[in-house]
Amino acid sequence: MERTILRGGRVLAHARAGISESDILVEGERIAAIEPWGRIEAPDARVIDARERILIPGLVNAHTHGHGALSKGVGDRWTLELLLNAGPWVSRLGSPEDKALAARLAAVEMLLKGCTACYDLFVEFPIPTREGLEAAGNAYAEAGMRAVIAPMMADRSFYAAIPGLIDALPAGLAAEVRGLASTSGDTHLDICRSVLRTWPFGRERVRLAVAPTIPLHCADEFMVGAARLAAEHGIGYHMHLAESKIQAVSARSRYGTSLARHLDRLGVLAPTFTAAHAVWLDAEEIRILAGAGASVAHNPGSNMRLGSGIAPARAMRDLGVNLGIGTDGSNCSDNLNMFEAMRIASLASHVRGPDYEQWLATAEVLEMATEGSAKALGFAGALGRIEPGFLADIVFLDAGNINYLPLNNLVNQLVHTEDGSGVDKVMVGGRLVVDEGECLTVNRAQLRRDVEAAAERLARSTVAQRRLAERLEPAVGAFCRALAATDHPINRYASAQGSDL
Ligand SMILES: [Zn+2]
Image (cartoon, rainbow, N blue to C red):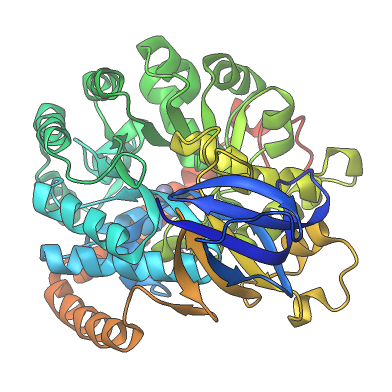
């Protein structure tokens, strides 16, 4: 087994630890020992010089969309619903090569910015395929990044998901969206089952999960079937939950109850369940999630960008929900920078109100972006700390970087100052994948050529979908704006200011 010593670094073992002057012995994929400088003797080990470096656990992205990597910067004043309206052109990829390319681009960006593992809700239109999922898995494996890939699925179109929306569209457009094909939940799950049987990647490296995308977009039987499949295979279940007010209000007209209550009644909540966003929850729903042992992937950057609101992170933590942090996809928050996501998570908790005891402390935010996200991915006790027995996913920050001049308080500066520019090396499972700020596993010049060619090709091949979305946008926007403005009991709960949460 290959042994490596990281010598002379300053180590932050976890969010609540102090800095220690320690050497780290890595054996194979795992951390074997951490000892004060100079104490580890392993003559056969290769040595990585960590002097002038601050070593922290790799950040874990609890919610992203690799398929969206080619769409960064496409939208501006889009709500979630306008993004979903644009989905057929901004999220569409063609060949398995394009799917691999998008995942590779996402992986490289995350690695360069100090993120070593992610939960990727990867969409393929109209349904997931073995070729597409394996292509995405292969891209992560080759880049040397850990990933949980959850095919994102729906058996109902966005237009059919919101009660009353289609009827509010001009007749011609209504007919067009009524004609959009959808595929049954059983077909989706059959594909997942088949891909799971022969998944070629190690469970520790690139594993599968399932992601019926949004409750309103999926029949109840589909969500229940996905839960059964996840339980059978011991895999994760990830779903967007109460991301926008439109969803919370629509759920009450469709289900006659709140989203979390509905999922609870269906029996799909479990410790392996991760809810993304969870902005528009009331206190009872938070207790339901906590009681089920579920995780929430908090994506405050995306929530701000899409005007979705600010999730009650403090209340969720206090009531016992495990919280991770995510960037969301490049098609809705434009970068995959976990340092920025931490900063926004901290600041978002501040703008909820002046009661500073309710704000997230920086150590809480860092804990969420490491151990909290790791638990959401199904890696509790294996990722998120630099400790013997944990996987050796370690980020080396340059102690001479401007972000640490001077070094007053490391955890505060990791959350509030670091922007990714301090990342020098990144190790995943004992393998160095970034060195001197450059990715060792992917040729960047080639990546650029491939990405630019694919973006041009995709823009040409999605003209019809783009035109349709542009024709729909005014009517969808007007309907949703009116629906969001209606007075509703949900107004009493989650909102950016004045919330009881
Ligand atoms: Zn998402």
